[in-house]
Image 1 (cartoon, rainbow, N blue to C red):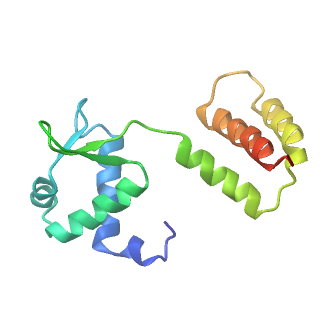
Image 2: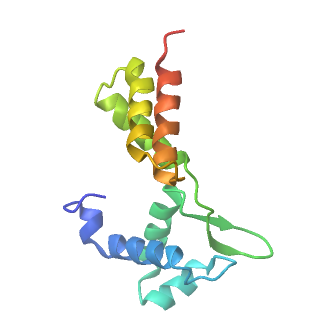
Length: 139
């Protein structure tokens, strides 16, 4: 979400950022149960429609999901690397990075990260480069 986007300036955008921050800081406990849209509207003193719009944005981003049945309501999703991986691959494609450069870029990243410590961001970037190269190879 860019700084100047309407979503960033709106009440929906504020709510999206607030809920995402609270999820990341553990405000919803280990169960990660957010509650119903009506409960969230009360919690944030927001209109139900605004909450539903914010939940739709968060759901599209893979941050939350709704469950129906016994434990009805919204839950935070386990973090997934699929969205960031797709975003990195799309970025590489939009920059017209030659897929044949991927092994060289991976080698440079591994060399720069040097100490061999595990870093989730470095791992994700390498994964994205590998999958970009695999998806871009002519068949």
